[in-house]
Length: 272
Image 1 (tube, helix red, strand yellow):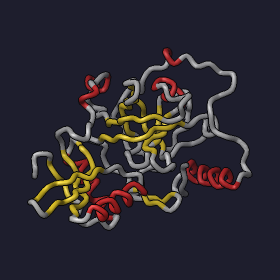
Image 2 (image 1 turned 90 degrees about the vertical axis):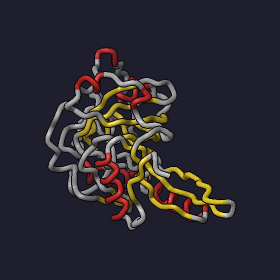
Image 3 (image 1 turned 30 degrees about the vertical axis):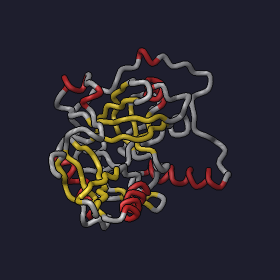
Image 4 (image 1 turned 60 degrees about the horizontal axis):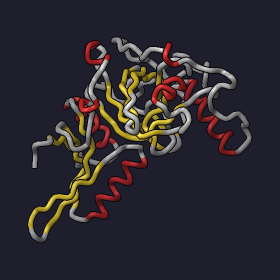
């Protein structure tokens, strides 16, 4: 699930992933045996301004044949998708940022957010929220957007189910007041106002579906928005977002250009 030479954590994880795939490594990840955790005594992570890790923020990195482009800023970042969690297998090992992974701390792994970042995670099924520090890379299982620590998973009620649909929103560490609480409506909904990225517009729906599939292979969430041009013409626009800062949308566009999607551009919600 995690892997690459530029950090020892990632190299170890790739090795473990390979051994597991071959069935030669017996230790499975999970919760600690015979240990009860009182999560009421464990507070949310407290956002604070920190320098970027010198280890976990390369211009790009490749894992299991996919290339990822870490963001330079988390400002305005919002994302929806599936969350998972990791526990005993990696407890005590180095994370991609160089810190030690502690499954009893409020932390998480993400593929592209700057390390470190702070995000609010909302379980969309039960509306529980936590704040975690992102200090690791992953998860690299297709379709998942964030790997939570064991205690964060308990707090969100997904330690038993394994996964859950969540929404994550980056927190500006300089704004302590907002970081302590925020209504669910503050974080991104796909039909809300904001800044979007239009990956492309296609007259053929199959072409739009193909682009969306390509994005999904890199764990990028997008939507297809049909638009009627006239009685004989319809366009299928592939969009990502919303993002609440133009800076974040610009970074997404740059990453898409590096992936060969040259049509990508910033798109405002009030545009046609």
